Image (cartoon, chains in turn brown, green):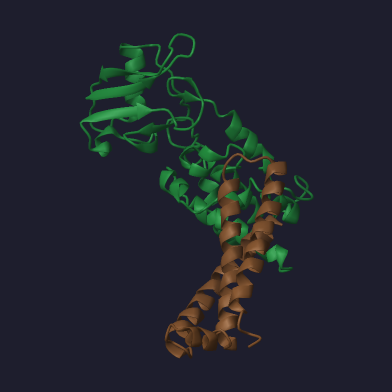
Length: 111
Length: 234
C-alpha cells in the first residue's frame, strides 16, 4: 500500500501541474463570461472544459495534499494502529471536501 | 592549538560539560592523534572509540567543528580553524564523552539481512562481471561509521526509521547480481519505516566521510519497489 501511495503522489503531482496549467488558461484566457457578474459566472459554470478542469484540480489537489499530510505525520513516531486511523480520517476528510466542493462548481449545469 | 571536547560521564556528571586542552599540533597531525595525546599526557579519563586508524573501520566518527568526520582521517590543518571543537555523533544516546550507543543502528542494520542471499554459497564460484561489480562499487565503500544515520532528520524524528546506512546496505545487496533475495529483500525496506520515510534531504550524502551518495541508493530502492508494484522487473 505504501508503495502505491508513493507512486500516486508522484502521478497526482504530474496531473496537478497539467490541471493547474489548464485551469489558468481556461480561467483567464479562453473562458467565456470573463466579466465577474452573475450572468458571466452563470455562463462560465455551464462550460464543460471549465467544469472538468476545476473538478480535476479539486480532486487531485485534495489527494496530493492529504496524502502528503499523511506522509508528514507518519514521519513522527506513530503506531501502526494510529496510522490506520489517520488514513481512514484523511480519506473521509478528502471525500467530504470533494462532495462539498463539487456541487457549487456544478450549480448552473442544469440551467 | 586549543581543543574543546564534549564530556559527559553519566555516573558522575549531572549535565554535559566541556573540557579545554592545549595540544601541540604539527604537519599532518590527525584529530585521532591529538585526542590520543590528550589521553596520554593530560586527561586519561577522556573516552572515544577508534580502531584501524586508516578510515576503514568507522569507529572514530565524531562531530568536529560542525561537521561529521572520522577522527583518524581528519588532519587538523585541514580544518583551517583556530580551535577544534569535538562532539560525539549528534542525536545518538551518549554512553560516555565521545562514545555513543550504537545498538539502535546495529539493530536496524541487521533487520535488512545485510548478507548475500544465494544458492550454492561456498560450493562454486558466483560469477560477477566487472560491469555488475561497478554498479555497486560506491555502496561497497560504506564503513558503517553512522555519520549518515546521525545526520538524518528522519532518524531524529522517527526512531523506528531504518535510516540511511541500513538502506544503503539493502541497495548494495538488492543491486548485486549474485543476490537472490529479490522481492523478499525489497519487502524488508518497503514498510512505513523503510525507504518511504526518506525525503531526500541529502544530509546523509553530505555527512558521509566516504563521499557515498546514499540518498541516490535510497531513491533507487524506491524505483525498484515502484517497478515491482506495477508488475515490472525490479
